Image (cartoon, rainbow, N blue to C red; front, side):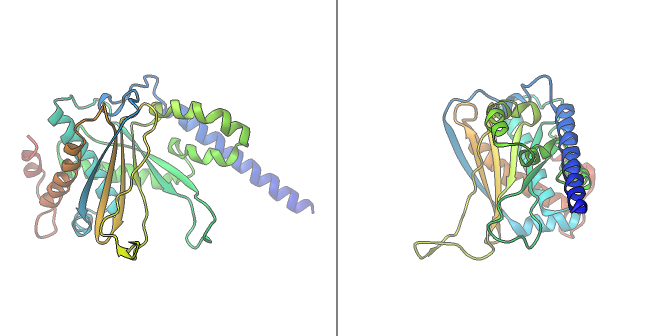
Length: 283
């Protein structure tokens, strides 16, 4: 009937409006200089290097309880701190502009039926590498993620994946190569959380003790980070261009060192220690 037609038309107009808004955000967020952060960008050598790290989930939760925010905020701050350590150990200057992480998020509603497919969006998050205080880094990450969540997963430049739902197949085929080439104009590194079942997984009847996720590299980028919680620990999988990042194991160690430092500055009582003591540890 006419009411159904009007409802469908209104829905399509709303979808078009969201798509236009996302497109405008992408244009505003895109950098004219696509080189980004030198340590995180590189021409592809066609080789890959892998490294892993294990983090104690209870340590992550202790930091979360002391500092507020979410466990994901703590992990993103850990990634930022590890990148800072890694770049300083390499003797590289810290970037004047904070590198941007693409943080995928699910748009699936709780209770969605199995097999309904992935519904993904993403947030863009500035990683505060120039900040020497681990507590301040965590606070900056939390503020950035709070802003993203306030806007919602269907808005902002990071929601560019949502546009795929609005485009016909021909546009996908024509636009995919361009989107891949333009990735580093929008973000510098992919940091993704890969959900796993809470129950113990097995392979050939043997329980799996460790499960490490691995994320793909975007064209022109040298590093990607994936995290999964399994068996009371956070499993970190690092994928890098083999030529651009020969010292990936150093970054993996930086993940554990940074979480240990965040735990230290929260103090044994669960209260965050003074900013001065945190800064002294990073001079």
